[in-house]
Length: 232
Image (cartoon, rainbow, N blue to C red; front, side, top):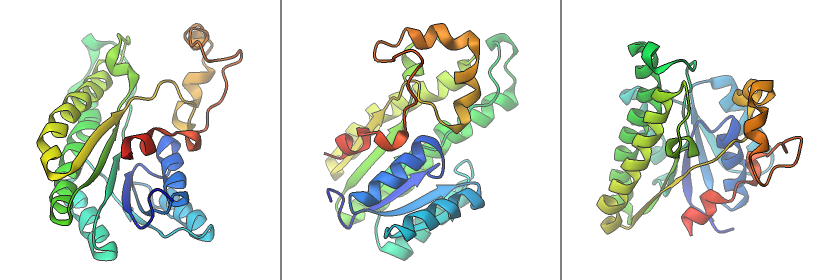
């Protein structure tokens, strides 16, 4: 019960890594607000959590829209009175393609969610945390930001921007007792990445992972310990 009575917002909290975090936090005592665009998925996760005894709510949110970010924070404060933890997990990957052919539309879609949305949600949540004595803010980045990855320059740019932002915010918000960290997962098999994992062209990459056993072990995001380490 390391998170007893804490209030957490998890963006993109209905699928993949976000769902794993959404399921793990209540087991540690947190009250959780799941924010994602798809109502059916969000409500289904909340239903599962409440049946298991968790205190959880869903707020439909597209974090690329500032008015919806404001609504999310306002609803959370109205329901629970505070925000102690923010997990910036929501992210999109548009179709990969050569850098020389990347369109403005493809670039903007990734940046508006992965970087811009997380930036302004963090801003709004930090204002609330300052009023209540501090908190913890976690960004889900990616190890792709530290290596060359063909055909994904727009996505790499968004995650690299997150890493730089976290370094800055750790200094800016630290004096307000707000701890800011990033977690950079490697290859994790979640719903959105199933096709990529199954593509024979990627098998050589997987075999280069030292901890993997042929065939690559399927990792459940529920087993992630990183968010708790970051909260420590």
